[in-house]
Length: 159
Image (tube, rainbow, N blue to C red; front, side, top):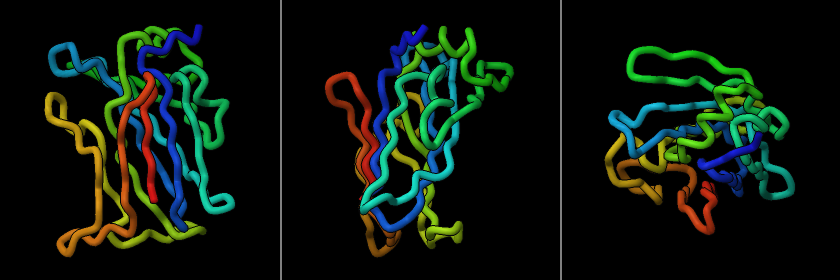
C-alpha cells in the first residue's frame, strides 16, 4: 500500500556541499501533534551542480538514493523504530504530513561546515513555518534554504 497523505517530498541540493536530512512528519490536527515520525538520510551529494531525491512514502523510502530504511515513530508516551516497509508506516502515511527538516551540510568527504546546520518548516508543533533561511551577519549560513508546498507536494531547496 502506498497511501500517502504526507504526500511527496522533493529535496534539491544546489550547493557545493553534501546534504544530510532528518525529515519530520506528524499529524498537526491531533493533540501534541502525535503521531510524530522522523527519518534520516546521509548524504545527498552534489551531482553535476545539483543533487536531488524524492520520497513518496515512508514505506518506499528504502528504495531511494539515499535511502531512509528506518523511521522513528513517537506517540505521547513512547517511541519505536520501524523498518520500511511496515504496516505501521503504511497507516502513518495516511495520517501525517511533512512538517520540517533538520539538516546539515558537509564538505564532500565528511568535514562539517561552520553554520552548516539548521531547521526549516514547522519546527515546533503549532507554530508558524520557517520557509526561508538566508545568511545574516549574526548567522552567516553558507547557503539559502526554502521550504514550501505546491500541488500537494513539499519542497526543500538548498542553494
